Length: 252
Ligand SMILES: [Zn+2]
View 1 (cartoon, rainbow, N blue to C red):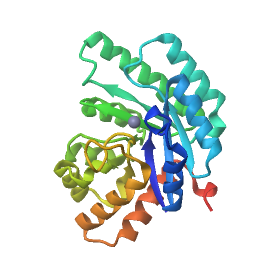
View 2: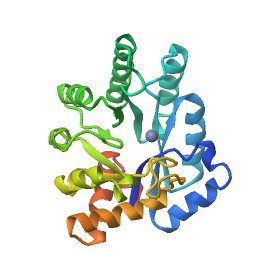
View 3: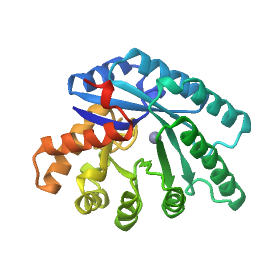
View 4: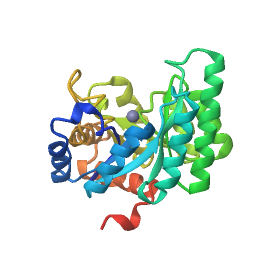
C-alpha cells in the first residue's frame, strides 16, 4: 500500500480517462489524496472521494486567490464538509508569483484564516510554499504546528528544522531525476518523508502528464538512495501519511 498525499485529479487534464487513472492506482495499491482548490474544484474533489474507495479529499485555496467572496465560500465549504475530508490544503504562501509586499501581507492574512480553521476543525494542514520556505517554517514553528509541506523545495537544513517540530516533507515524483530532491532524500530520515505526485504536474518523465501510479517510481528511487528494500520505503511513508491524516481506523 502506498500513499500519494497530493494530487489534482479533478483537473481537466484527466477528463478523458479519469476513471482509468484511478483504477490503475487502485490496482497498484495506491491511495490518493486529492487537493481541491477553491469552490468549483472542491465540489469536483468531493465527488471523487465519494465515488472511489481509494480517493480522499483535502480542501484548500491557492495563495494567489485574493477575492474575498471566493475565500469566504471556500471556508464555508470546508466547514460544511468537515466530516468528508482529511485535511485542509493546499494553502500557503507563494512569493514566486506574488512579488508585491501588500499582496504578500494578504497571503499571510489568508493563511492565518486557514490555520485558525484547521485548529477549530481539528484537521491537519497541507502547505504550499514557493520561494517562501523561511517564512512558512517560522510561522509553523511559532504555532508549533506540524504540517505537511507539499512539494518541499527549500534547503536540507530547512527541511530538518521543519521536521524537528513535526512537519512532514513531501517528496514529489520529480525525485526520479532531480538531483536536488535526491540529496534531500539522502539527508532526511524516512520517518519524516511522504510521497506525492502533484499530478498532473511534476511527472517523472518531463513534459508528460503525471498520475498517482507513478509514485511507485519514487518509492524505487528512494529505496535505491537509502540502500533499503522497496517495501521499507512503502511501509514507512504509508505509516507517516496515515498518522498525519488520522487514517488509522479507515483503512483495514
Ligand atoms: Zn498541488
